[in-house]
Length: 139
Image 1 (cartoon, rainbow, N blue to C red):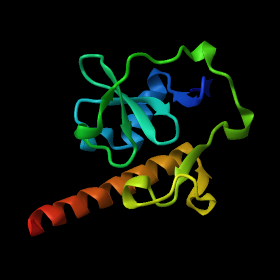
Image 2: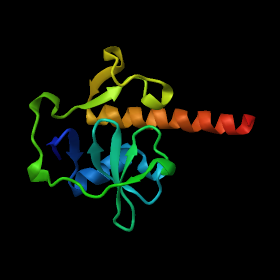
Image 3: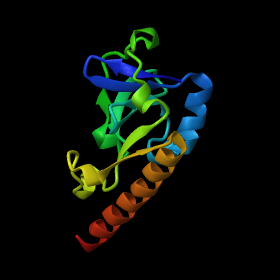
Image 4: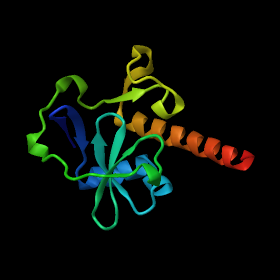
């Protein structure tokens, strides 16, 4: 795994083995069938690749196809400026933005491990899916 800054954006890039583990951790096949996790862009987006090799960014929550954005390129691992202050951690919004959480409110921000991030992403996406299904039923 390589972590660091490219311009004003923080990236976490997984090697091949880590990408397989991350894809499982984020339950990517459940939310985006045919995609694999490559890493994270910023603190809110996963970097994913489809079976055709195209790379996209998508919010961690909600992990839905309609939010996929084609990425023109990824930074080269050797070009990332390492920042020891956030190594091994991911900034997480306690209440995700799609649920009305604030990206600037200090009480809504905490630092989590990669494992915990995967659990949180899976849990919030499950909640999002349930709420979306309930609203479709009531529509």
